[in-house]
Image (cartoon, rainbow, N blue to C red):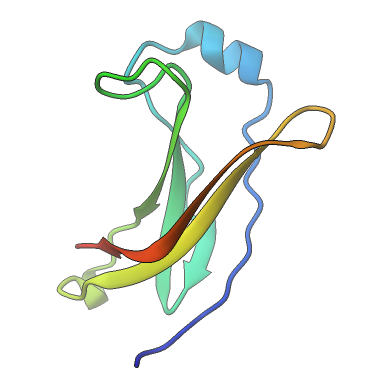
Length: 103
């Protein structure tokens, strides 16, 4: 068993209507490095008009490049919630089994 960090972060993509209007399918908006866990940095990638064959909102957790730990696979379980303007959760995706984030 390895290091187990429990981390919570809040990422806001403001004015989603404007993001949607100016984004093309497959176009990504990145949060930048906002999550720090186990000595690694992660960002949230938002595809307002979908990715690949999907034309629905798509969000992904991405490991940032870190040369000092370049050869290590990272295993992480996570959840991402989408909160509407009124403050209510409108969608939640939970990755219960750890996903492998490769360099």
